[in-house]
Image (tube, rainbow, N blue to C red; front, side, top):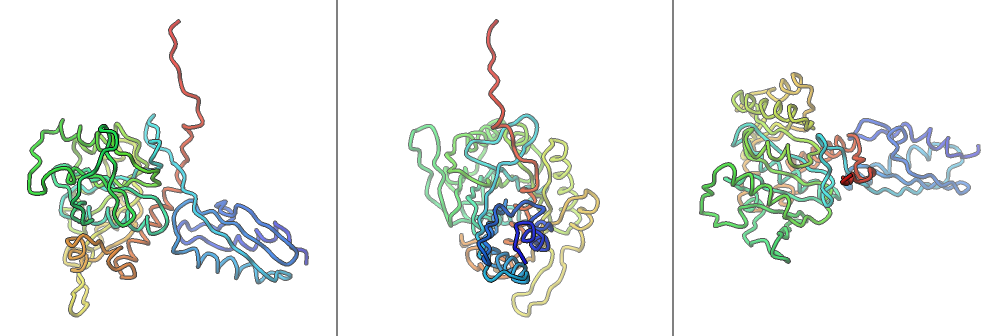
Length: 362
C-alpha cells in the first residue's frame, strides 16, 4: 500500500487534542508531513503552551501511524507557536505583549492573587513567556507570594525593568514602596499608577501578561478595559453565596465592556484535612457550576482549600514551584492549558496587517 499525505492525515484525524476537543487535522495543528519510503515525519504546531503533554501527543501520533500498513518508522516534532489574539473595541495589542489576561473577582478573600500567580507559573512551566502585573494598588500581594523584596531598576530613568522570579516577569507597586506603609491615594492617582505600570514597564516579549486585579468593579477595572487591549478575563470565586453574588457582578461587567470571560475558577471548593485527608465542602457546593450554566461560561477548574497552599504562598514559593507534582499544582497546570487553549481558538489579531491611518491637511 502506497503511503500518501492524504492517508497519513486520515489516520491522524482520529488523534484528538484533549485541551480543545478537536482532532489535530481539522484544527490545523499538522503543519507538515514528509514521507520517505516507509518513514514518515510529522511536524506539529500547537497554538498554546503544553510542553508537559508533548510526550503523550507524540505517542498518540506514533500509535496511530504505526497501525498503517507499510509504515516502519515515525518521527514527530512538536513546538508551540503562541499568537496575538483580537481584543476589545478599536484597541490594538501592545507591541511587547501578545495577550493580556485579567484575573478578577467581585469579592476579596477568595484567593484571586494565589490563582493569578500560579496560573502564570503554570503557563511558564508549559513553555510560554509570562509576566504578572499586580494591579491591586492598595493591597499588592504578588511581591510576598513570589518572595521578592528588591526594587525594579530603570535603565533610562523613564521606564521600569520588571523583576524576574521563577522564570516569570513581575511588576507591582508593592516593589516600590515600604511594605508596611499603606497606599493612601485617591482613585485618580491609583488609576494613573496602573497606567504607568502597564505603559512604562519594559516587558520582554510576553506571550501572556496576567493582570491580578483588585476586588470589585471600580476604577482600576474600568481603566484597564477602556485603555488597554485585553484578550479575556478569568473570574475567581468560592462556592459561597456571598462570593458568587459579587463574582457574577464582575462577570457581567466584563461582558458590558466587550471583554470575553474565558472561564471561571472555583477556589476553596473543598476543604482537605491535612491529617486524615477528609474532604468537606465547608463553603457550599455547586456555586461555580450554577454560575457557569447561567452565563454560559466554562469552569476551568476547582481548587481545594489546603493548608500547604497558604504556607507556600506565605513563604514566597507558590505551589506550582514548591510542589510541581502535587495535586494542586497539577490542577493549576490543567487550568493553564485549558485557558491557553481557549485563547488560541479566539479570532487572531489582524491590526498589524492594516496600514496606518495618516491624517493630512488639505
